[in-house]
Image 1 (cartoon, rainbow, N blue to C red):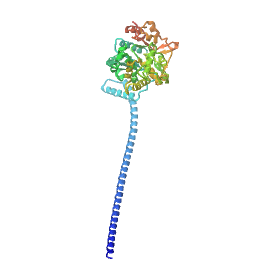
Image 2 (spheres, rainbow, N blue to C red; image 1 turned 90 degrees about the horizontal axis):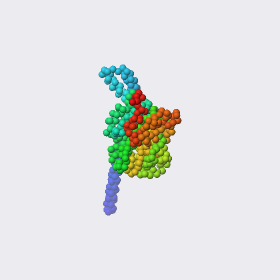
Image 3 (cartoon, helix red, strand yellow; image 1 turned 180 degrees about the vertical axis):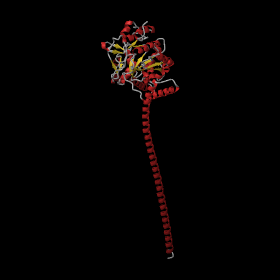
Image 4 (cartoon, rainbow, N blue to C red; image 1 turned 135 degrees about the vertical axis):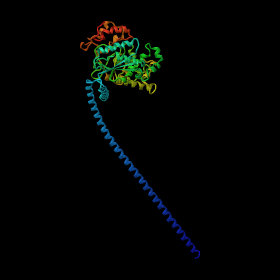
Length: 465
């Protein structure tokens, strides 16, 4: 009994310890649960607070947007009022000009009115009639070409009807820009009839790579060609100038071209928006020029044109031979820009990405291609699928007399009479030549050219000597 009694006491003690340990564990678990619950409540509270802040931000943004919308509507209304005010003030300007005097107050009013006129022009510039063209003269100041430009300008004054030409762009070497600006102001048709605006461009503003740089990139071509690299740069300029042309079509000139007939809008560009083609390039080298120009759209060597794309739009040498001619030529601004874009794509594939189109073409000269600006234009326009869309040939209206153009020595009176004859008209079912070319490289000199042209392009009021 003594032995059993201590055991019972020991068991009771153990049970009490276990009971206390269990109560303590339950108590601790309960505290952890409460803490977790409290943490959840705190996190939920923080989340709700963040949601509330985001909602407040959204409401602020919505209010800001509503304010901006109201401001925009008010601004549109103000702009409309400004336009009306400009129109009223512009009319007032016209009235003021009739009653203008020389005091200082009126001078200030005149200055304000000129500013108003500029605002009106910018806001309400009229669209250009598609039949109106831009004239582009690529020139340089030397003893042969400079004086010939006087004859060209005189023929414009004699034969152009107002509303035929929008702008005359004169593209010249950088060092000659100021000289030509003075020449344009003094010799150009800037008299009683404002036939067109005149703008002088430097060659570097037309060619991406710069004229001087390009001249250094074709040493073999310079040695090989009798006319030098400047001859090729003139070709590139007639394509690159498209970026500066304000009309849908432009007409290219050299200094040895003159107008041969009275010219009005609708002749060079038809009423359906198509530029007049010469219809044949002609000359002993034409097939090579066209073929090599087509080659340039596929590679740097002769024969690159043997490509499936040349058949896609029937862009064969035979077809292109019967499209564009030489200078003068009517060219589509859109087609020229697409031609340049296509050439740069070819340059990226054949040589390197980012290469300028003009530098690419100069490099092809070094590898043997003999392209021309008009061959490139005809090929590029055809490959773009635009040839029939932007051009048309008229069998009774030609840009120039090809026979006379190829032989510049034909400056005799009977030859001149044929070109300048008013009988060359549609009514008589005979060919009408819009322009006339007396090429220096064809055999004519400046004195002969002026003597032959003078009776036909002199001002009507001037008596012959």
